Length: 188
Image (cartoon, rainbow, N blue to C red; front, top):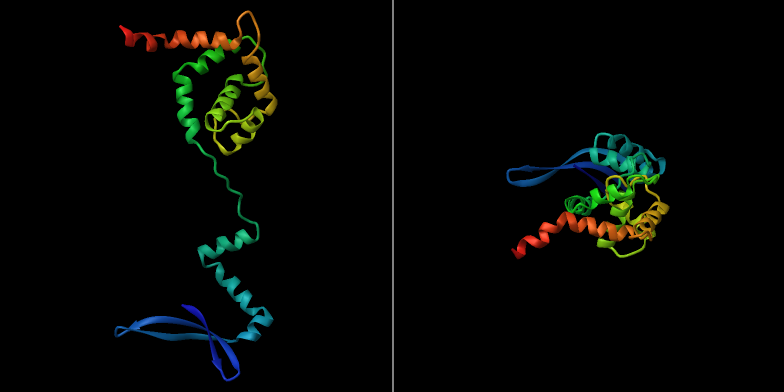
């Protein structure tokens, strides 16, 4: 079914028409004539007719709700990078080593998650901690929801702390000791 304008003399009428097949040919049948097009448009009756009929259409209900601002705001977040590199992060021992090095320190945030976020960001897109903080909004990364920019700064500062041996050096040594078999087994 569809709307059609039909001219009759100087006037134009709005009709609801349907197509149907009879004996292999398509025939049109007028369901009803709604009235003169100009009168329907001037009075607003055509708009109210369409609006009242739209509640029976799933697509038009959604479109109408969208126009009125009644639909919830939806967003998408990428999950691939976190899924892949989270597993590598854990299997390489990074998560475990960072947790052990941080143990006893009184950080008010999850240092391991802050470091994971900054490393993941640098793998996919070069940039600063500030850009990592904005970048994460488009990605689903477990445990980073409560992190703020200053947490990323503090985590990176902790990693580079100058102690008898820097945290970074201790991290590398521990990581190597966990993965030592990986590097030595191929030579024997």
